[in-house]
Image 1 (cartoon, rainbow, N blue to C red):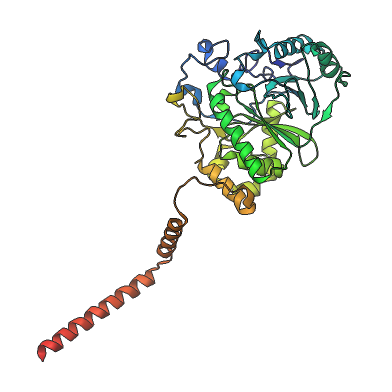
Image 2: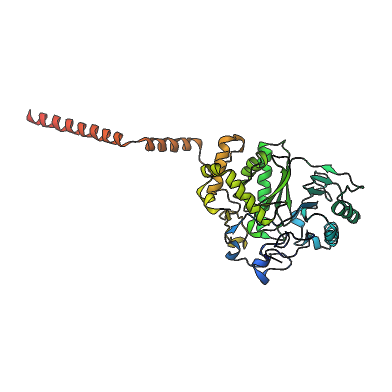
Length: 408
């Protein structure tokens, strides 16, 4: 099996793994990390997660090789069971999972199947299928159509005749929100989705950026887990995975990755179509090409890590969840020094992505504090000496006047 980082999962289908590691899965990364103590159902509702789950983890190279990602739009994360592909009450995802698994050896491309949120009457209705990097959508797949759909589209790589494929435009952001499968993602994911939508609505309401919750894409210790599909600067469709994403990282991903087409290496896990080693080599090449920029602009912590590490901490109140009401953990907090540094750089260049620091001081208090700080910083030694000289002169005059008065 290779690295043993992933276990078999019905929602992952590949022909022949091209790397020494097992194929990419949507199973929890901690299945093998925790050993037999992890529930085979994937549910963490009754188990205790210790601090060992949250040791530092290098992000780059943690996405295993795949060439095609299929998303089935189906209901809400709140009603997804831990294993939606095996649920007897969810016929469509169960049948699609079964047929794709059966035909995986006939497929020309390594394929990953994931569930994303679907709402009837919206852009992503129940039964819609999104396919990347093809950037197409098939509407209203039913359980009656599964066999022909898989045969035509995923095996033969031709159009599904009963359907009418639609072209997808813009960028598509998927955030793991599978709470019944993993509590960390169940807490972090919805917060990240809300933040993405708020930023898009405030700063680019007419932009072509779609944000959807999705089922588990692997990476309990990497949550918040985010995947972004879209055209890069060379007009090629790419799929980039990011881990340990916080609320403060959302404006950065929108501005740097989606608007500018630049990778956020501090959070980057890997890319569709690349082997694990190729992902590491690709990042090293970016470092070399942008070495001057990295040395001038990146924080010391980022430069020293050489690949960047995710350092999450356990939250006892949520048995391992990364977000909580007091926002003390490292996942979805809004006070990361590195993140704030990056966003301040963005804000200086693009005011539309400035984010409030959350403090509740009035503008008057800020002005007073700023004025005092500036006054204190500008106070030089020469000013101190001059002030002392004036004070001594005044004392001398007072003493002389007093002596003259007494002599009279």
